[in-house]
Amino acid sequence: MAPTTSPRLGAALRTAARSPLWRTLLVLVLLVAGLGGWWLSAGRSPGYPRGETHFATGGKLGVYDRYGQLLQTHVAKSMPGVRLTLDNTQGSIDNLQRVTGGQDQFAIATADAVADYRGPGKDRLRAIARLYDDYLQLIVPASSPVHRTADLKGLRVGVGQPQSGVNLVTRRLLSAAGLDPDRDITPLPLGLGDAADALRKGNLDAFFWSGGLPTGALTDLSDHVRIRVVPLGDLAEELHKAEGGGTDAYRAATMPKGTYPNAEPEDAVATVAVPNLLITRDDVDPGLVEGMTRAVIDSRDQIGAQVHAAQLVDLRTAVYTDPLPLHEGAMRYYRSVKP
Image (cartoon, rainbow, N blue to C red; front, side, top):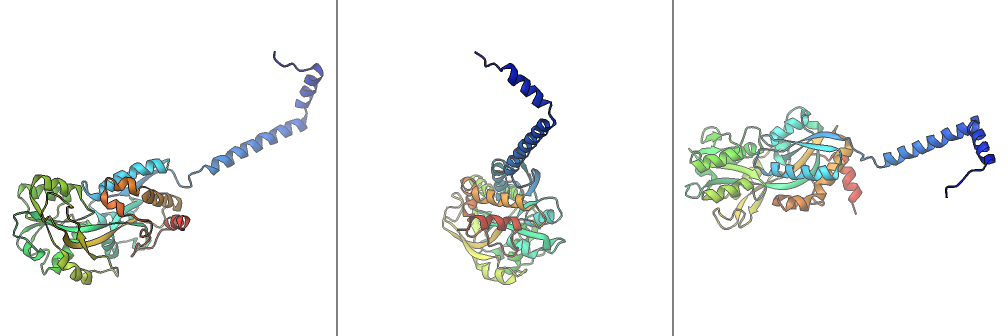
């Protein structure tokens, strides 16, 4: 049975409802309720600007590009409201120009390219994390007479696109080997995909690549044609001496045995490595940078399952971003997780 209201109580309620005091109290109650809802909503705010943000990766088929694709998926889940748009580029130098020019908020660039960069806005560059190392790789057909960099004299050599980190380090490698990059070889400014295709067709004698291990495009190339990785370790010391920018960007390194199972040699290959940095600009929102830093660290295992180089992303080493200082938002994240 529905409850009933006595005539006296009903009359009292109607009288109170017409009272100015009652109306004032009702307005105050509604106002407090509204403020409470706003406070709860603010408490759920993500702490970063929502909307589209741009990330400069690199050439298609490269490790930068694949890493960006996987990070994009993770950001969509971990930072609701942020749409990470990936921009394919020529590589590190192009990425630096795009970030300083405002076309992209985030990018990946090698430490040597950062140290060498002299363009406008250099002082506004900031780091988010040290990611993984790129390994310098000189690829030739298995039957090639090239067994060291100096043997490239007179040959057609893929040296990377003009605005790529590959081109920067390739010129330094050739100089360290005693070759003039413009006169002693026929330099061809090819990206990874085009270089691999040209080598496969016999239109190229060799090409340089700088990327994480293994690089999928090289694995694919080795499945279709017999290739060999030429050691570069003999140039490590000379390359280190010749580098500019005041950073110890290059280090002697070894490509593990079996990096490319169908390529020669079967044993490990001595080479040179250079760190990759995730970079941004000093005016990018600290909350957005903090969220991006968290996404990079938290996604390591997920991304590393498909991009093996990403397994090396580590909280302990991520803060070593020489020659760039950390962005305020990145520092905020690292402090929050510091033991």
